[in-house]
Length: 593
Figure 1 (cartoon, rainbow, N blue to C red):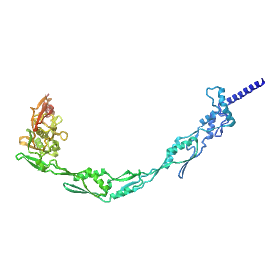
Figure 2 (cartoon, rainbow, N blue to C red):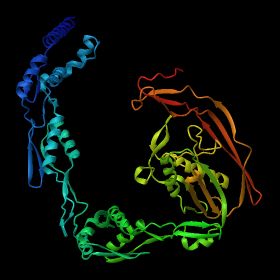
Figure 3 (cartoon, rainbow, N blue to C red):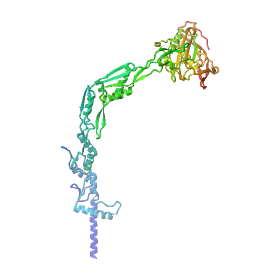
Figure 4 (cartoon, rainbow, N blue to C red):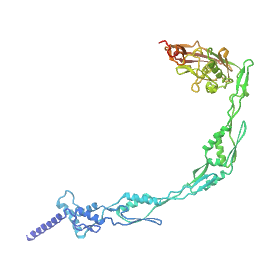
């Protein structure tokens, strides 16, 4: 019985001692715990943190050596931002002997924690410090070392100064493996280790190590001028390209070799050669000149007014390739490729043109026209003397009449501009274009472009057969679909106030107007306009524009070909109503509408 009681007393005493021990260190580090030789017995978390910070700042870590050849960089822990995380380290020390399960009973946790507390007390417990480092500092170090180590390779170059060709040799560069160094520094800084790191530096050879071969080639290409000959219808034309110009044409490019390297290659600049040939063409090109002809109805004979001339032009695209090949092959003479252009209207082939009879004719009248308008009609009509339209080609009125300007012989007369009839250069030219249109109408030719006037002009009857032009936007055009040449012969008879266009060729069709022009939608003009004019005296009234009814007109045409084919077409004209305009002197009483 005694022993039982004694044993129970011992147990109670032990429990009391253990409980007292647990109570004493309930918020303090258990005895025997140290960090890097720093005893932390009985310290609170905050006391342990301060002690660790005081004893281990700066961190006494190992030194790192970076080595490349005979270069060495020495890095201490502070260079890498290595230091102790005192708070985390103190927390590890405090956790010794406290492995109990949260929520567990006192006795259960005591059974798990007491062996570790006893071991720490009896044998001591060393805690490795938790380290931290600065990745930003490491990145700066890597960047700085890369700047010291890296060297860009230099490519071999070639330059031309005057006729001197100079070269600069290339050399190899080098590049630090920055990613590998960054990884190594981060790995060692994480554990505070030191040692030696051999830098990995790669050689960067230049793509082009030498330009001497290209320089030798270029020097050889510039040893003599290039002589070019153009042979055309007007004889020979010689041109010389000196070494200075050829030097400007040389260009240097890179090309891959069989070994995967690059080499400088001498080439000719095709764009510069083409620009040069464009200027050369201005000197040697000669456009073909078309013949102008006349026809004598009495004899049925074609008369040559102006003979044709064969033209020539430089084949610039082919010539670029020929010059390029000549330069690069060191050929010093070549014949430039020329193209001979035959005239479309050849005066030596009039017998083959089929101009043998009158195909169509038209006459319009201009009685009452001013002398200025008559002048313009004569000037415009003369521009069509001897005009020939080859088979399958188009006749363009604007192409032959050219610019309607004072410089081209035209004078001021009345013209239609906008919604008014007013004075302008070239009034009367539309009399000629209308006559040409009517001749083409009666010739049965396809009309490709034709515009009616704004209003039904009194000179052009019947309505629906007029054609206005305004160079260069509004033109009158027809197609020669006869298979033979057509010769246009204009005639102005001022004493009769008439202009006639005759078209000669081979007649293969008959043309008639189907019925009369169909006039619909007739519209009366608005009341007259009265405008004051300082040029007129008081009481004077002068009419300057005349009223015309608006109307829609359709003219139908039937073309009967010799092969029995019949074709019908029509021409639609829409004319606006045109009001009269009067001018009066200041103070004049005028009618009210």
